[in-house]
Length: 326
Image 1: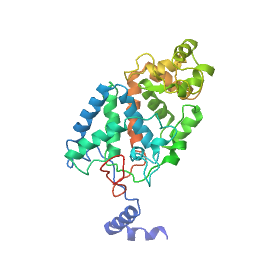
Image 2: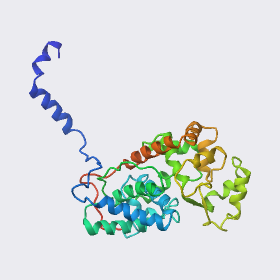
Image 3: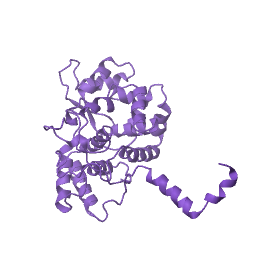
Image 4: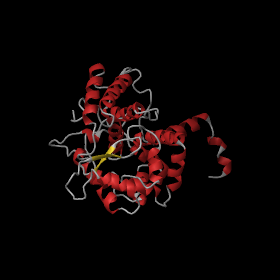
């Protein structure tokens, strides 16, 4: 087609037709929105916030558990509440995955919240959205950052048990593996370091840090000695004994986690690799000096994580009970 033929096709009708054809071939996907429940369940967010505050006031550790629950949900087939499903004739529960079993907590808190929300707005608010906003409210409950949560996720009717082994990070992972895994979810190395900062609260089981405190070389000797007191060297002895991930202020959301890494006092190997002469050392240094930057980056990374492969529109369902399919 020569240049002289173009003007004959440039008309409002042609432009409209071209735009229509382009849009009609784009995937039709509903967008998440902070105002999604404003008309259909206006009291949902205050109901959830009150329930989270109550749960965290009863057990401070629950704040870390709810943040981690959101993380472990989103990393396995997206933020779809698949992690909440119990075993059944058609479901192999993600709860039994090695990185979740006897580790991930907070299921009963989400179930309780769902019950309260169902009583005011039956069949409206998804379990996936409850998990997402509960993580934000849990952060705020321990003086952590807040962020705008977008809504409109729907709940899966399937579980991703087989995916959990390869899609969830391990306490043994190298820096390269962590960067690669987070990258596969659309998260940058900076996002990964910021999200790891949630280990400023919460606790870990002896079985996850035993090898590091007895055989690790990149660890402060005094710190290792302290941690050995409640974590015997023998496998199977004291495996479930708990230790705070951050020793100085274990119940407050701050940047001491990063200060500890610089002092070689990361409890998990997957923590310490963030500051071990690698590509993320500069980020750890920055967060150790600027709590404001850490809080801002953490909030941004949580928003990005909440956008991982949600079910929207007509995909998925709104479960009546979070642990079973309707």
